[in-house]
Image (cartoon, rainbow, N blue to C red; front, top):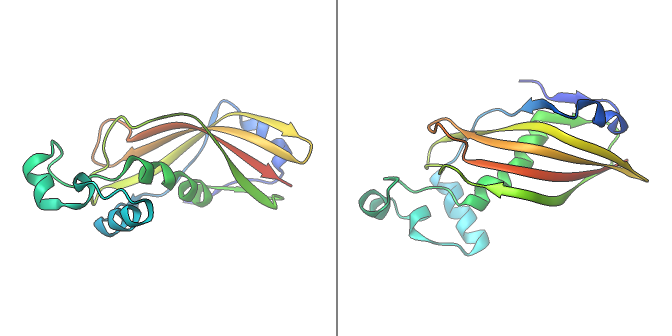
Length: 153
């Protein structure tokens, strides 16, 4: 799927109120869960111990850390959206984040992005995206967030 291209960051506001891009599917592996646990120090068994998860977890398998799921939005948007004329993009923060459904190990996830608003700053455009991370094995999204990114030109 080709990236959605915006030729000039100052025109981003033209897409406010619209879904603008959807990423490809990404497989969440047990190796990723272990790497994320090592990077963050969150070694809770529900993410890492398949045998225990099968016995004790309501999900039956290890599930991804919520913050791992959230961290994938940067990967997804880079794959699905190209804004030309930008020298630097900065994650400015989040207004709201929820994890309505778990991401089971070996599930596929993807990001769906809408533009809530964009405003011009002296040397940047601040974009607020609605983000939905979908999971191929869940009826509900596994993450919904409102994400703020500043695009400096």
